[in-house]
Image 1 (cartoon, helix red, strand yellow):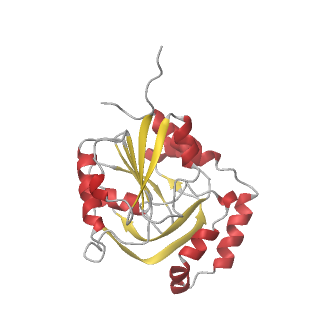
Image 2: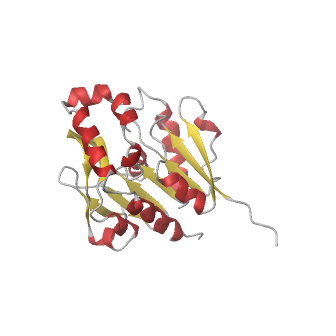
Image 3: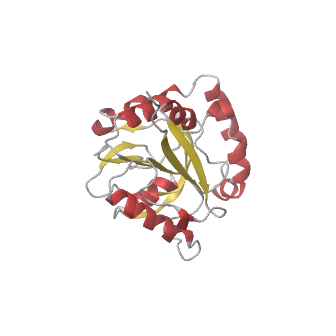
Amino acid sequence: MPQSAPRTALAIRHIHFEGLGLFAPVLAQAGYDLTYHDVGADPLEEIDPSAPDLLVVLGGPVGVYEGEAYPFLETELSILKARLQAGRPTLGLCLGAQLMAFALGAKVAPMGHKEIGFGALTLTDAGQAGPLRHLANVPVLHWHGDAFETPPGAENLATTTLCATQAFALGPNILGLQCHPEVDAQAGIERWLIGHAAELAGAGISSAALRAQAADLAASTSGDGARAMLRAWLEGLSDG
């Protein structure tokens, strides 16, 4: 019998070093053909919101409310509104989750403080019952100063001391993660430390301390929880 065509995954990438990391091999193993669409290099207008089998929106150092300064945000939000209204499989990470929440009618605003560093999530009952159960007691990278409210009709899946809304799901096909479970501590975060040097300096956060934290985690964790979480979510996607 002829093999079926691979499913397509399109990742909107805002900054080059914030890619899919640990998630990329999981997508490949699940039969997805992954393509990156780099904002600022590849026109967002070329994206058909309904075309990819999976759309992933990655992180970045801008706020969803900065459309006047960064006009691409309006185009990206229009793509997401059409995609989410159709219920097509969509995953957002950090800025991506904030854009999804905003497109779904939720407020996104500065928290008044930064949450930067590795730490475990506290799962809600809904989080413990779904794919995020694989992230229980797993330190993941946090790197944000904005936060989303849980969109109407969605479930809040996780919290931390510094941010009450770390993840949301709207049905089986829509998942937004404020944190960065895709980041591999074993691969190091040097590109993050360099790329976000100004933000770290402004927040008074030590790059040396973050580097040491990542090195300690690299010796004790393998990323299995993050990969298992994504695998479980992909397995639960609905075609309906």
